[in-house]
Each structure stands twice: as C-alpha cells, then as structure tokens.
Amino acid sequence: MHDFSCTNPDDMNYDTLAKKARYFKQDEEGVKSMSKILEDMRNETKKDVARRLLKLGKIKVEELRECFPDLSESDVKEIEAEVMQLV
Image 1 (cartoon, rainbow, N blue to C red):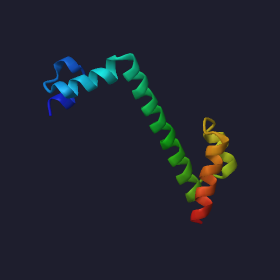
Image 2 (cartoon, helix red, strand yellow):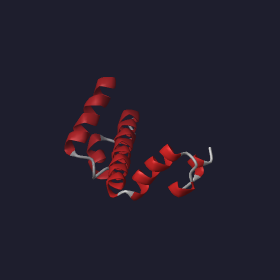
Image 3 (tube, rainbow, N blue to C red):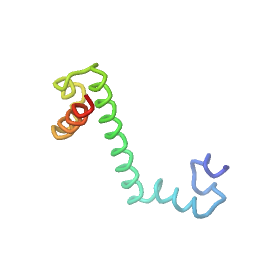
Image 4 (spheres, rainbow, N blue to C red):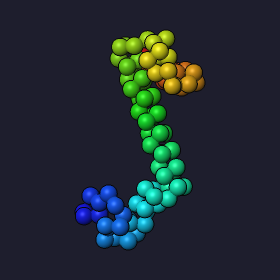
C-alpha cells in the first residue's frame, strides 16, 4: 500500500510499479500517453453529462452546443440519437 501513496517513483518499494509510474510521470512518451488518456476521459465525462441533461429534459439539443462548445457536431448528433432511442 505504501507504493500507491508515493508521488515519487524513487520512493516506491515494488520495482515494477515504480518503473510504470516513472514512465507515466517522467518519460516524455509516457506523459503524452497519460495526457491523452486523461483528455479522453474528460471528453467522455462531458458527453455523459450532456447525455444525462438531455435525457432528464434539463437542456435542449440546441443548448448542448452552447453549454458544451468543445463537443463536435457529430458528438451532439450521437448524443441526440442515443437519447431519442431511449424515449
């Protein structure tokens, strides 16, 4: 459990975990990879929130574009289609 609370891979006891943590925190490729993963997660969360708001009737499709300007037009159409199938 100690290793999971460490912020510095050099302080970890388990070598395999330390190597992976070092890769994602210090290696340029690893940092890019982790940044991409986190960005994808953030985008999926935004789509999920938009989907839920639309499903609950708290927002209209036109308002999605205004409230979530970084969602692509295809994302908005996908969300609208998913919600319309549920109704």
